Every structure is written in structure tokens, then in C-alpha cells.
Length: 458
Image (cartoon, rainbow, N blue to C red; front, side, top):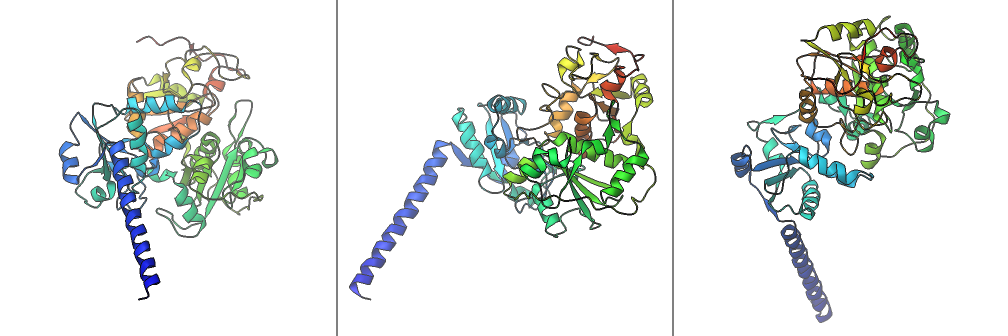
């Protein structure tokens, strides 16, 4: 070897060695700064049920719900784990810190506890650890969920119908012809839903939409003044005009999950067997790094839906059935999915609904601060909230999964989203009271129904 070449090799070797040393030193420094320690499966198993330990799933909520992501053998989460997704920390929201602090409190993540943060990509746990460390948390551990999931004897939990709340990667695989988990292979449609025609929709053409998606104006499935669903005949015609049969896999989504859920619930009502809501909507699709297209995709009709009347009529009920639910006080609940101020009659929530209050005997099921959000049922990134937290929230109001539950709101949007979440959770005897407060209040000529205002008496 020539002397010049030998010196060059020695110099490169020295640079490489120093780089490795610096990287290792940086990693160790980072771990030290974040007070991070790795925990073994054995030690995790030994401590998991202790009151001074809390196990936290830092992955996307889709994985927590049940999807097998990032090469994990089994979907779902470690039994008893709480969720605090690293994705929440990158959301741009004016009330972000308040909601994060609220989530920490609800999940029992406190500084005096030993906190195990697990992920599957080696990144999410570090992100959450840095955040907690900045808040003064010290007893932080990291863990790779793949180790736990590889052992069939280790308990994991998933939502019974988690596949209803679908991931961006699942939709991308569907578009790319990869036959993702649970897809029956009988054709699919992707619907971007919002109020207004395509030309007036800021979400469809201006911002863009998922490849192949068609725009659905919610007026195609409901009409005023009550804003109840159309007749079965009209809804089946809508499905046929949109190219949907009872066997079509339908993915509904939008910038706001509410109108998408409204369309999805109505499709389930008429009998579409496989309806899926994109968890987190358009924002999560973009966050995953997938492109949006701005071309106009027209609906392509089919000759027959496969049925001439709604096949799942109990999924959406009307006024007479809502009254029967209220009368059955021991086994049924009419659940109000409106803000507290709407429930107690401080506001009607709508400029076109004058009466204030609630159907007498209904119970508050939570919602958000006003009729534009569902923060009590969504995480910071608009994904579905933890099932256990929803059930716990309901339990405080005497709402339990074994009861017959019918959800209502003002005109059906908020309650439809909660209905789909309850369905994904595995609740059985559930429905949407379509008319909601708009119908019950007599806003359009039906004033005979009993109304309550104020805080309910215990």
C-alpha cells in the first residue's frame, strides 16, 4: 500500500471511530437526559399489576385498537396498558397542552409512578419520554412490544370490531391492490363526505382527496327540516348511483369524521356489510405521508344494490322507538351526545332550533364543548378515544354496555360517530335515534314530547 493511501485509510478509520464514539455518547447522553432505562419482559410481567407502575402504549392508536402494525405479530395492546400516542405531540392545536395534561391525568400517569413506555419502531417511546421528562417525570422505562406479542401466552386486548375503524396504511394497501387484512375482495368504494356539493367543498378539490375517492354531499342521504335520513327507497337508489352493493367494502372519511360517520351509519342501516371509518380522517392520511389527488371522480352506478329495503333497520330508530326506550328505564337508555350546555338547556346548539333542553328521562353521554366537536370521544389527533375511558365516562352516568343504548344529538351527526365507535368496541344493542333534539323538541310542529332542563336530579 502506498504511503498516501495508507494515511488516507488511517484518517478515514479515525473519523469513523470518532463518529461511532460520538453517536454512542449522544445516545447515552439522550437516555440519561430522559432518565430512560430498558425493562425486560420478565420485569415488566412482574410489575405490571402493581399500583405504582403504569404501562403506556405510545404507538398510533390503530395499533392499540387491534391492528397489526410495524411488524408486530399480534394486534392490540398489552392488557391493562394505557394509550398516549407520540402522534398527539405533533398536533397543532390551540388547546393542545390542556388536552395532553387532561389525558395524562385520566390515564393515571403521574411522576411518582414507574412508567413503562412501549412501541414497535424504537421511536415513539423516546418522543413521549422526552415530553414526560420535560414535565419532571423521572422513572421512565422503554420496552419493545414485539417481544410481548411474540409470546402467545402473554395477554393482549383488542376491540371486538376494531376493523371498522381503519388505518391509513390499510386504505393505501386497498388502493394498491394488496388485499389488506379483513378485505373480502368484492370491490370497494372510498367516499369523502361533507356538506355541500363538490364544487363548493374546500376539502375535496382544493385541498385534495384520497385517490379514487368520490365526494358525497350529506344532502344525498338526509333532508331538512328535520335532517333525518331519506326513505329506504331513496337511500338504496343513492347506493346504486354510487356503485355500492350490500357486499361492497365502503371506506368513509373526511376532514371532519362526523359527516363521514353519518354517511357510514346510514349505509350500515340499509345493509352494507362492510363499512369502515378512516381513523383521524384526511389529516391522518397526510400525516402518514400519502398523497392527495385533485381530480374529480364521478360516481359510477350499479344496476342493483342487492336488496329493495333496509336490511338493518334496528341500527337507526325513529320517534316512536325512542319513546319505548325511554319507557324501559331498567334496561334501556336514550343517550344524549351533545354538549353539557345543550343537555341542561342553556343553549339549543343550533341557530335553526329554538327550544332548549332534552327529552325527559334521557341521560348525558358526553360530547364536546359545542356542536362542532366531539373531544370527549376523540384523541388530540381526531382518532377514536380509548374504549375503557369511554365506558368509564358512561358508567358515571349510569350507562352500561349491557343496556339497550340509543344515541342522539341535534340532527344525527355527532351521535352517528359515537354509534360507530360503540359498534367498533363490540357493544351489541345499539342504535341512532335519527330525529334527535330537532325532532323531539317540536321545532317543526311536534311539541307534545316531554322536555327537561337543568341538572338532572339524582
